[in-house]
Length: 118
Image (cartoon, rainbow, N blue to C red; front, top):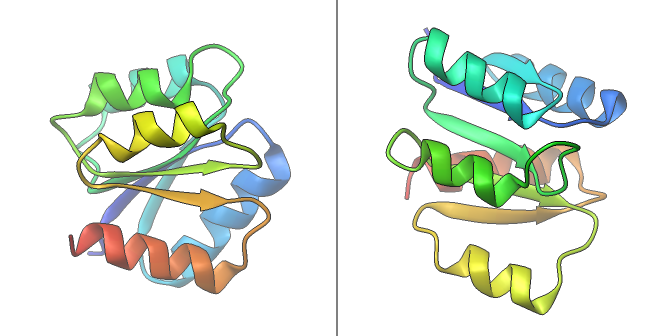
């Protein structure tokens, strides 16, 4: 069985693309459209090996979600724009990478592999 990945993204198109690409790459993928939905999955599902999280979720920030799951798994923050302050905050988080939108599917796979192997 492949590594488990949680995709948290409120854009249906981006979420669907991430799920499709990661599933084809051999990962077991679950998705959530909000931070609260992701927190429910984190509590009720077996542990995830990695989370791919949109920085700007509609209910809680990607950083806040990472804070809730810090002990559980590494993360990749995806975003169309990050301020210098946001980048500095993310840089303080161990085993967390940033992937700026728009990104290519091979960039997503490479980021996932780097983060899992860090």
